[in-house]
Image 1 (cartoon, helix red, strand yellow):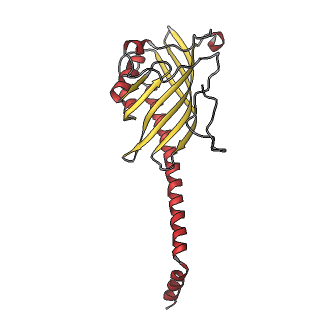
Image 2 (cartoon, helix red, strand yellow):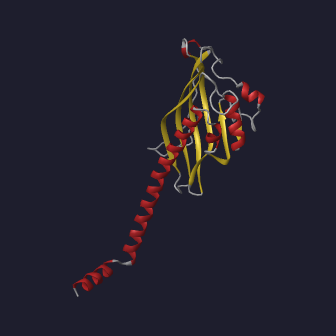
Length: 231
């Protein structure tokens, strides 16, 4: 009898308005979980790309992209589709699967700033790229740049939609970026000249020592306003 009374009391309190409020809270919590899970998945995806490229696993890296995904590095132009992306990366780093003997190809990816869309199906992220590149007893370089990337969730799986690396400079390890002359630190690669892109670069920009601010896709997280100043 006591259980029946308690049940009746609960039903009396659970008015339509109360039920709607509970539904709204559940929807809000669901969206929050999707945002958190999306952020975690995007970070995992981008870090996997860095590790695969570090070791010359070009096909594995390309498989992280959507079927119509794109990659754009510096002034090399835009490569579209997994097969084109894999071949471009392969040619950019020695022309074989895996690194060539004595090759250093460290893509250190830092400072993730991930923004997941309200529907939980797409995201953007900005990252800092610090590259340590070179060939044993031949040459060694530093690279600095900013990623401004887009991601998409397809069939429950997050994939790279567009990877765009704005290269700030590529400078010799010896004496570093301090000795660069204007225009020296950013050029089209030989790989891109021999293996032309599907589309030209989406824009031009001055490398170090000139200042550049790659455009932000995400709004200011405090004000909600677009971030200006990109060139």
